[in-house]
Image (tube, rainbow, N blue to C red; front, side, top):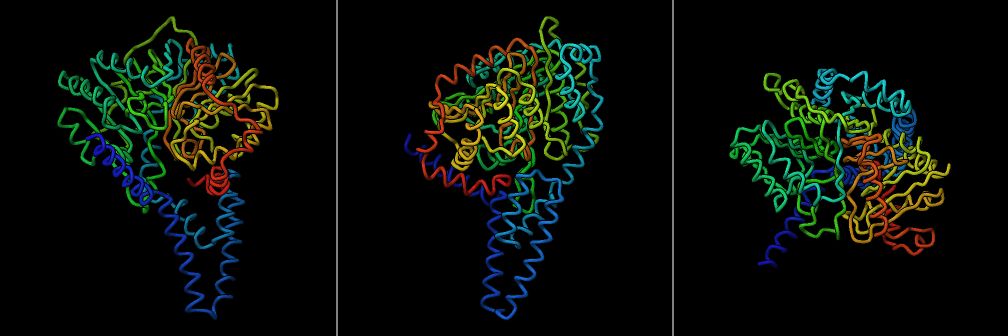
Length: 525
């Protein structure tokens, strides 16, 4: 029986991989590249006399694209990638650039989110006394708070207790306790929901609470349809009294929806408690199954005033595909008074939307790096950096800040693992210390600095998180849990191997080649 189940899982995984390729940007890239090859072969076989005309047109097309890219607002790393593609295959590059710039399939989403953001910008007023107090205590943190608030309705809060969970198992245990306390509503928004032990126990509580009259809403990313859940799963939950929907169900590559996924993890209970972090609702996140060794992940639980922001984030995303008359009124859910007056420090929950011009996730990370005095300690599953973020990490180390990164020792994906390696030599040369987690896979997204600042959320150090996904996080300043975050980092480091310039020379040739080759396309992956 176990062998049969294993075989079925492997078969399902294989099908998921094929569907993933067919419905992704990679699938489109293959098709466009084939068009380029077919044009060249057609010219060589049928229209030999026109070959000079063909290459003349390609020359001018390439030159026009180069001029366009140099004057575009793209980041420098992305420009280099596009220039390389156009140099090798102008037709392929032109078609792919047109596709990505057209934003087919998500203009309606972009417009609706913009409207929802504008309508709710004043839903949670910034407590002026809190902001002025922070400004007096730490002008630099107040300026970051002002920037984050400008990007959306993300005030800075006091009176919020934050509890840190160093493992998925720890969050899961507390999550069950808090769900049992729900009396009014439960909002859940997760990138991945997978049937198994973890989701089974959660679903049992959700169904029971729904019968008791608690308003239960569940939203998950549309890619789950091809990986962990059946297409009719929202209907199955509706039969249990749970309102459920997919965010942007995946459509073929005629739509760019695939590249704008809901990578957030948000749980709000009664407007009093909120969870976020890297932990999805599937068994590997609590080590109930073994995938890529020991799964190291983290989360935080907020109790108090800052919960309002996560409530609003959920409602904005839920209302994206709702008709105006059926949209949920935020005032009903965020008017609940909840505070922990004796909780020290400040908390700023925030989101990052890929459809605007703000790179909030990256800019918050860079702000921490640029203002650090003693240390910046980072955990991330991926390391695929643009030039701006890589320079910020290196500059912090070069001016004497103790910069350390903990990355996976056992990767979940081979291409990102190879791409991470391409950054190692440059970072190490600048004084950055890089560690790989020997027991398995690190999925945590954590920044902690100088014993006073930390970020825990969903934002990876890769292009997908920083440019293409909907993300969220909690920025903390002088909260009690920061010492717990740093202690967890140091404890995790003890189970890692230090990557050195010498060890890089003995790295697998396959990993090196994979990284060097794929780095050309890294902004598009």
